[in-house]
Length: 267
Image 1: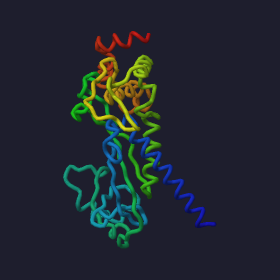
Image 2: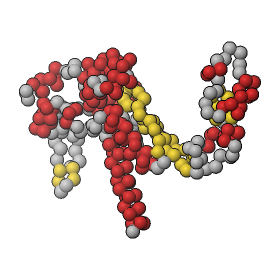
Image 3: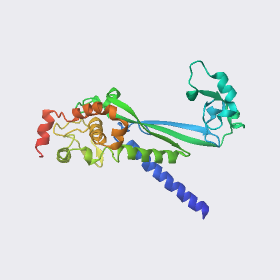
Image 4: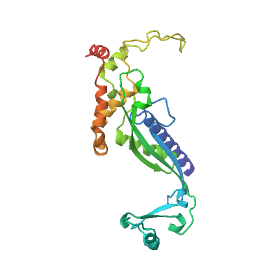
């Protein structure tokens, strides 16, 4: 029964990790290209071989030890010898090998999975047909970071932090669409001559419907950003960027007349 329970637990963990991955891939803050990267655009990912103390293998050769931290007095003579003229003792640090500091060699014990996230703010014209495709128009900002002892736990932890910081959103979230846009695009097809036969689309040049309203990733991101700037997390961590963010958001409110004319039909 124990083996069966473990298999069930492993399967449940993988399913949770799968949901976490797709939450990250579909979030308008951390992934501006839902058809892109196999993880998500705002991901930095690293696997690290660690010892029983959680120190990675780079510590074999060099560890930074600060004057004043627990155990530093064992190396007081070295601290004093390496103190440079004008250097503050309270800020001094020296480099030691793992074996020097811990008195035993570094030995591999486990792998840790580390991540950093980036969130995006679109700086281009959200009503232009292609500016959202240009990566130069996507400003990057540092988001949550952390680590775990398995790949699945890493994804789950990352998703939880992203949800806490950036909200529970996806690119299809109706909160990111105007009611008029939803009503219009329910009544209008994107292409006039889109035809199917026996479940397959007939091959022919597609004719764009001018009455259909595009809501691209740039506009969706800015509507998410409008929500984000009112959160405590943003006010606490990104107060110095508020002017910049509000400048981006303002672009999403400068609706072209041709678009507004269509929207007004549904008011």
